[in-house]
Amino acid sequence: MGPVMAGKKDLGPKVRDLPKSPGVYLFRAGDGSVLYVGKASSLRDRVRSSLQSLPSTR
Image (spheres, rainbow, N blue to C red):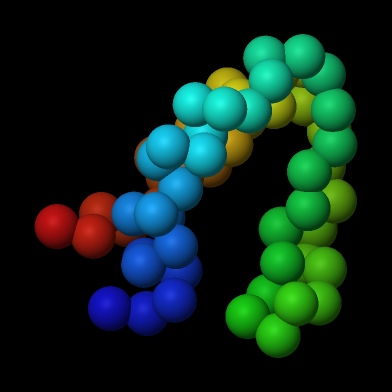
């Protein structure tokens, strides 16, 4: 399992703690460099949506 898949599995509890308020988010590469900067009206919903679109770890 690659780092993205392992990371997805570990993020579930953290997603619940994200605010439902607007904000910005960063997608980072494995080396820490920023791949994408986005904005969302609900950070929690946006992160949850992104994680659901990744391939399953099961």
